[in-house]
Length: 287
Length: 281
Image (cartoon, rainbow over all chains, first blue to last red; front, side, top):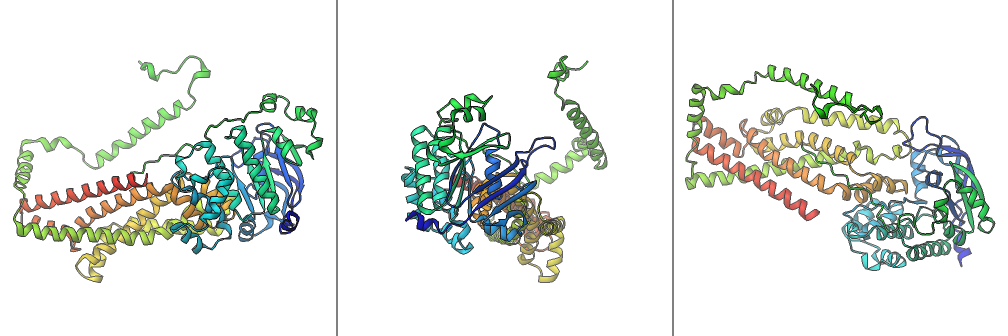
């Protein structure tokens, strides 16, 4: 069953010798990603680990066609991403779902609308307007929420949710998106260990059932090695290892996290249930 | 002697490196301000000279008591309604013109700038719209009204067109600024995941900025009520025209009544804005 479905996703990812800079970087700053070559097949599940500042997020952004590369090439579905016309590229982006660590949820929006926003890429403009007037697909949204134990929050406003709930809503959006590649940045940073396990399982199960390529960056090394068949270790924007998780040894991990040992040995989430919400920007216009 | 708060600490590591620049710009601003007061012959104390006090108190005392003749009040009520209608229709016209221009000119909704620099053609288009907005709002509504009174004749239609054109320039500019100074990450994320610009606008930008946009629009509506007073002087109808009539006849009582009605209308706009903000919060 899963194999039959996965045939639908033939979206391969290929990075060859990619170097990319952080968009806000100063001229002297080192590249966020340096000489990275990777190949990820359709339907693969990959965890990206590494100490803080190692380029995990940038790596996901490069694959998401969101961060332009300085040199090297990014191939998605055998097309060189940065040689495509804007329109073609935007079409291609509909196949990618990038979930940032800070869930992109407007505070005054309702959970249902925030979830349905994930369906936009394959929806006509008229249909998406109608859905704002009266939400379509509320059943699908409610089922996605139920996967993360949030079914009762369907009609709530986002600003009534806790930080952990927001993060789970952000993850539930993936289930609604038409994309065949999920790029999920630090999905567990605001969740307690039980919720984190549940959330990870929901994502992995859905991805498996639909043949979706799942790439996530993780701070939790134990989750990465236990739940993902393939683990990529990054440090200072460079590839340190790219191995089946069974071959990721303690020594390799110790080497990857040297000078960052506290990150390796802490099992608890990095930000236990703290809200990673952006501070609301209040600008007063007097004109 | 430098006051204690202005003195820099002796330890160079603790010195605010931005301090000299800040001090310089503060003093420069003061120096630049001085010519403005000279150029405008700003001498408020002449208001207090006995001769001038007599003139102004004579003028103001004419205002009392305000005219409360029922016939006049009915006329004013009708004209007040017309003023609200001019302001509302004018603001709506401005909205219709401003929204598409905002959507085109805001950088937040640029797909090409999602990754690096904006492309040349969209950039050029944004510049063109910016200039159209500048032209629309740099011509005062009074001038537009004088033009339209000649085209469509005396009456409120000229006022509506005048307000619509000038205010579309203002709304377009400020809407663009509100969108650009707000949080972008939701809209950016939607477009990165393949949504179109308009979808990102409705699902990402609008919910982030709706209160700001509404309160500015209601404030502009309030301004339009005031502007229609001025436009009445050139024959564009409404309370302004009555104000002009009463002023010409030196009828202070009537002027006072009309001014009170204006205050009530502005107060009403204020209440409406506060209520809307509360509802949308």
